[in-house]
Length: 116
Image 1 (cartoon, rainbow, N blue to C red):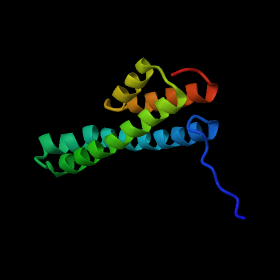
Image 2: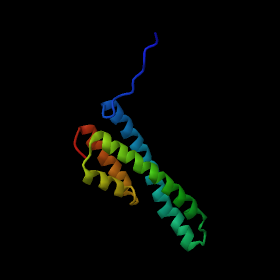
Image 3: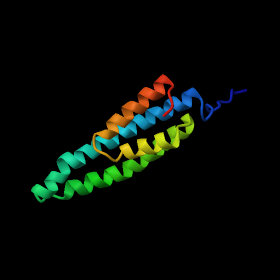
Image 4: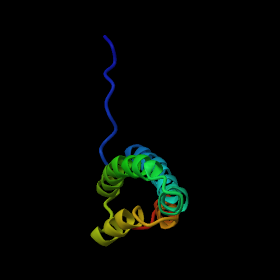
């Protein structure tokens, strides 16, 4: 008889650690795209009349922010974050450079066992 594999409980440490890893990857990707959008693409659009990069990076950031949003909400539900902590984390993903600060603070708190 083959042993059945069971998925870890929704709020187990293993499930929370996996959700944290997904959140960290998405926060980094979205943060990098947002910085590139503001630091490279926007100046090219307005100073060099080259709007293509804004279109490409803006669209990529928008779709990937949706995945970031889902990964952050998934982590918040699994780890039982406060509503305030969840909203602040989601908003920080929309501000250049602060997404990195938000990711760092969430990771630090999660690893220390502190509430977010």
